[in-house]
Length: 226
Ligand SMILES: [Zn+2]
Ligand SMILES: [Zn+2]
Picture 1 (cartoon, rainbow, N blue to C red):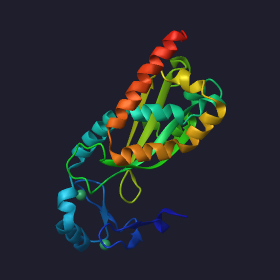
Picture 2: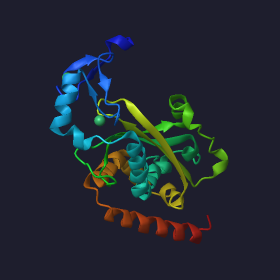
Picture 3: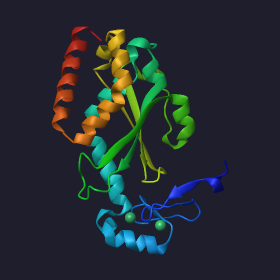
């Protein structure tokens, strides 16, 4: 399929149009319209309240990633199913999540500002080919406690708006590696659903659980002399 045959949806009327017809809201970059008329209709019907300048979007994304850092870090480890993979799997693979901004939430920053729509584990070489601007460094010498993830912010129609990467050294990985193989597989198969549930509820008290988990993991790995 050529680029011309690719269609997108108008945020106001819901119709499918060629990409060349659709014009993006230049203020928020989140929604697209087939015509000036549709843009006007959407504006008075609520987009005037949900539309915020793009700098605010970048700020909100950073804030959101801060809010969920511990949870994302935890599942970045779980998603790798380390009990069933080579020891350096954390150096060669990473969790990737796709998110969209919720237009029904109008006062940033909020834990629920973005919704996780998709998730996967990708090899580093694929991420590197996809987002060369992120300049991933090889993680081989970064040790067995090194983790990273990619967050892809998409607009309402599925176009990429921002890509962020984050990396950590985490004390929980030795524990994740020692999980029972069946458990590890089960958790890895369900990590996306877990992340979606936690973030959808916007319940930051869940964070406390993961904070505790990571503190315990730190003690555990000290005991084992990692
Ligand atoms: Zn339209
Ligand atoms: Zn807008």
